[in-house]
Length: 620
Image (cartoon, rainbow, N blue to C red; front, side, top):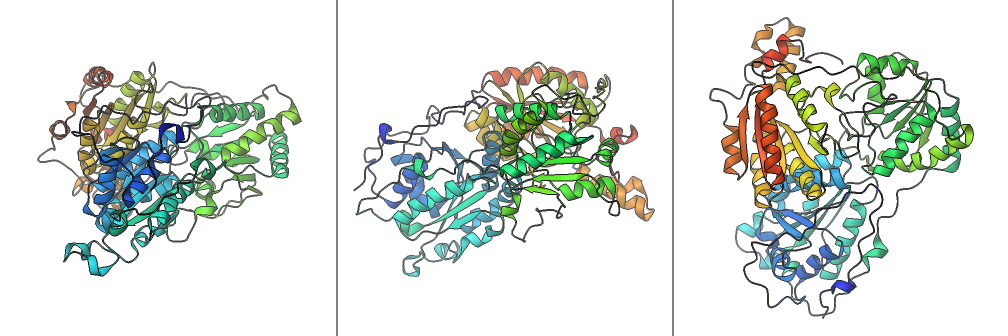
């Protein structure tokens, strides 16, 4: 019978390269393990699954307990000792995956997740879809009641057993399996990790039969050397494509680089900056994706936006060569910029591997973009090859800028009296962030993008991608977990609707002592839909004043601070810019003590409207 691997037998972790963050250790002080197990030999099917989790260096497993994987739960506690992976107990299955999402946004590496039967998987589906749209990795373990009907318990095992449970998420996951033996389960885990971690990333799912988990192991289980099953490096572009792209870009009079889904690695960030400077190309970025380029660089003339602005339109109309680095919705960018009937005169170089994930169920593949030079490669792999090719053609010195430099107008000052509008909130937060190393785990919708200043690839880790409400709390917790002990502060800016849909996720942050600052931009309404109702009223010539009806979360107002404190967090309510600035300092003190802190920041959306800062019906 196989024994657990000793420390010397387990694969060594790869050395950290320049720019990689120090991942938080899973070796928390374990307050929960009351009795050290005396029978920690590898003896049951679920022990083998747990052993593979450890060998894959999956440091955490987020879960909601469930009887369908009671065997695995026992193995995590009494075989592994609740370490490597460490269990993150959650209060809803959607939170388990959204925490893994936030973790992957920072690390680009998978966490493990366990969800109970079909009912837990159904709870988790929205968060899995978010990860699919974000192209991020996670290894999800599920379970089903006994496949053998003869051993099912009456009632409960029947409603928790499915013939093809993976079908629930097959349209928005990379791979799923339901192994029929313990050796098959071990291999399935290895494959799930490899596929999830292969670029372009995505979720994988392994469903474990209850009977398989609880089967006693009577023969030796052979564990493969995981070092021989790595995902491998993303493919590099064809040399002839690199040379063609370099020639077009060097010869271009008005080159543009669209930086989309790119890596969090600092070396890759530096290479992207060097490429833009070598070409004198203008760079555009997007708030839907993570920080990709320094926002105040002279070659970055327009703040990142969710939708194109008039300035972006002017740039793309002048462009003669456009390099798209996995830009989200490249065709839609041009439709919004040029209109349906205007021809695209620029040569388009489209660098993406996204087509490998498209399956026809979800339209997250967007419109089919035309490209004069399609390059099937990871974007940063292309940049690594393209930069020396450009320098061979025109030398090592930076090229003269081929566009007017960024004017860099200051974003202004917050108001000093009365309830804040969203812009006041953003300006105060910007001032707080400037002298600190801060990772923004998420921004609320409508954030004034001209107030951001990204100087590092971890300054902002992107939107939830699937566009559902309720992902913000989990994403923030996952990012903060990944950054624990890294020297960076995690701030999560969520809307009040986002907070309320998943507020009990913060109990996990309190329980696991994950420090973070949560800022709730609280306008006491579903304001994104207020804007839509305004648009409908304008188009149909109906009273705009009624746009708040059926949208407000007021009368009575929800006490968000009381809810946060009920989960074990500290917090306070503020309404003015001055009070918000002071609250951020108190939140920082709590963060430095290893605690999470919630600031309920009152936002006057009717003030936004009066000051012309709403966005309803506006193309930009």
